[in-house]
Structure formats: structure tokens, C-alpha cells
Length: 148
Image (cartoon, rainbow, N blue to C red; front, side):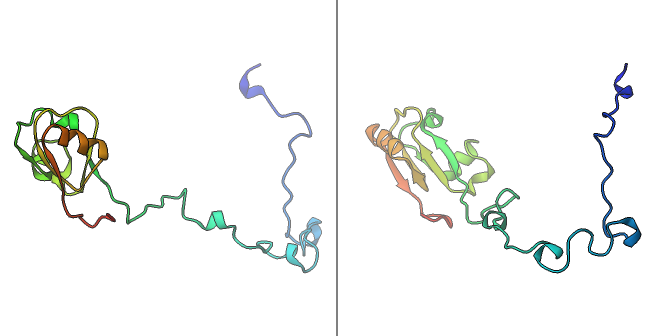
């Protein structure tokens, strides 16, 4: 026996009932729905559930969402002391994509030994403390259409 020889058990597969095809077909006129009432009408009434009204799960994208370019302290390791590091310098060094068009956030992964002046749009508390402990400072730039 091969897979193409297999058939469903006799009587287990029934043909679908073709309703609304005239009186001689046995399910004509009202097609088994009765006369009048909610069940006789298309759609069967009722409201659209709230969770189906939401655009989630179908490609909804929030147009107000701010995409941040992230820079960690360990990425600033080779910068000499006293240097002013801003979005333009970070983009030129290849640390952030897209030429520094998006706002930059400084995160605290790694250590910094040089006293740097870092100019970013946002900085985590840990990153700020580590830079100030090394003798540098963090300057917050004005937001580029962000909510902060």
C-alpha cells in the first residue's frame, strides 16, 4: 500500500449541503434559516468586538514613536581625553548609522577612563555617573521632535 492508495473511511466524508438553490433541492427558499428574525439575516447582527476594532496584529505602526541611536561607553574607549563627542563625530566614526539624523542616547555599558565632554540628546543615569567620575561631563542637546 502506498500513500496515494489511502482513502477516507466510507461515510466519514460527506458532501457539503448547497443551500438556497431552489425548492426541488430540499434546502431552497429560506435555506434552513427559518423565516425572519436575526438568524435569517446576513451577518447575524451583533457589534464588532473591541479587540477586532483595534489595528493591532495587522501592521499598525505608531507614527509618533522615536527611534534612538544607542551609544555605549565601551564604544568611546579610543577617544582621547578632553575631546568633545557629539552626534556628528559619532556618525563620522561609524558608531551610529544614518549620519546622526536620529536622536542619540548614551548608555552605561563599559567603562570610560578619559575625561570627555559628551553631547547627546539623552543619557542614562549610570552613563552620566561614570563619565563624571572620570572627570568629564554630559551635555544634553535640545530634542529633535522627541517627547522629552
